[in-house]
Image 1: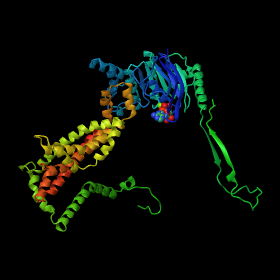
Image 2 (image 1 turned 90 degrees about the vertical axis):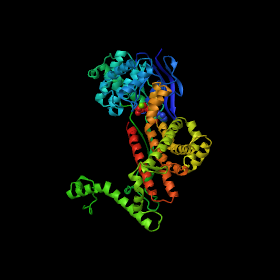
Image 3 (image 1 turned 135 degrees about the horizontal axis):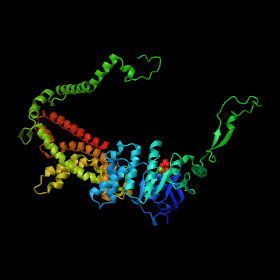
Image 4 (image 1 turned 135 degrees about the vertical axis):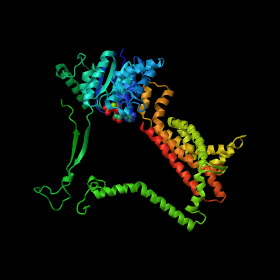
Length: 303
Length: 289
Ligand SMILES: Nc1ncnc2c1ncn2[C@@H]1O[C@H](COP(=O)(O)OP(=O)(O)OP(=O)(O)O)[C@@H](O)[C@H]1O
Ligand SMILES: [Mg+2]
């Protein structure tokens, strides 16, 4: 039985259909990356998994039971960190620890908080408030807070998109390490194919919205741990990367935006002087009538 | 500047003009003028207007010199007590401040939870919003008699004090109520989502998420409320005849002694100004968190 399961899930906001017929099954211990364009409904999808949003139709299940609301067993790392700005790093993490272990003594709880803070290498910044931290540090606090909930599945909503390439690489390695050491089930939302290939066991493309749906998953049978320096030279990696990108592009083309409009050329004199004309029946500039219809679209079948 | 032929975009504060020694000196002088000389000029102009008025069309208005001579005992001995309604100016101010503090405390204790309820519950808002909008513009002068009637039957109670507190609390409450409600509605959904994912209890959601997120709005409300509470005190003391800065003003007027009225007005204004400054310091502290 899959740990996390979506069955024919549809979600719309007002008139706009965001998700249509989404099916997903995540096994225990699996690392799934969902990759999609910006605005295609990735956050909506992960909010449904977390229980923050209810699907309009279809079912969302966790461990066999319908998801009726959020809970600490499905730890969500928010796209925009969502740290509480009036609490320090330590207090933000402690919020989760205190919540999960109300029966522990104060000493045990603060030791546990310290462990999670040091796990993301923020011990030196434990008494700072989020406003005093860099983007990467904030993201790490957010990860530590979520890990402190000891979730059975970790939902990461584009945790690294807002960071620079170097910080991103460091945090990717940390996520890979956490996952190796704890055999954590992870659903990673991302817009970066390389990140997905570096971390995941399976990559699932999300089609372009509106009415986005999940395409067929692509298993990534590369062995862990994966080395980011040698991986790009691995022929298997290169083949998988082509496959993921091709899948994204072909799925994207289904809903390629086309723009059709009438093109009216500017009303310019002189006219074609070589043309025979009758002086008696001239009815205005000739070019005005030259109306053309053009269709603009992005080339989607390019490999 | 030679900007007659070409459109130049230099401003007076640009480095090119500031580097000119004469201009730099002028600017320094001008900035001193800004914070010292100009306010002084304003005060002198008002004084002159006051002199002129008391000499020409407002014969009953004592001129500044007479006002100063008559007010001097109250200023030089600010804490003297010569009689119930003849005390030093700071002693009167102190009495008024105590009354304001009590009424203000009631306004906050009642207004903050009410604002929270309004912010949380749309039902509550729909039920109470019309009545709040109607009661909000009612003047303290109208509430005071009602307070006298309400507490008039209480045996052994200081009716005038209760009525004054009732008036101050009722008039000063609204900014706190409305700002708190706006603040609660403005709590980012993200923070509430954090509380939901962590499954925080209602109490913890309130104390750890909602109240801290609303504090800046609440303090804006508190500052405005304090201003109104101070505004109301004078009216309340006038009508009840309680000793205090407003009561003193009214009593002097009724006794046809006009010399101290301006003193009272200035004191009321100064105290209100200081209170507002103090509150905005507190407010800024909470906004920066
Ligand atoms: N609360 C909402 N109300 C109305 N429309 C919404 C709401 N949330 C999302 N949408 C719409 O749903 C679509 C998908 O939004 P979503 O946030 O899921 O995209 P995303 O894939 O996470 O984008 P990004 O990569 O930029 O984070 C967007 O078109 C957005 O306008
Ligand atoms: Mg998103």
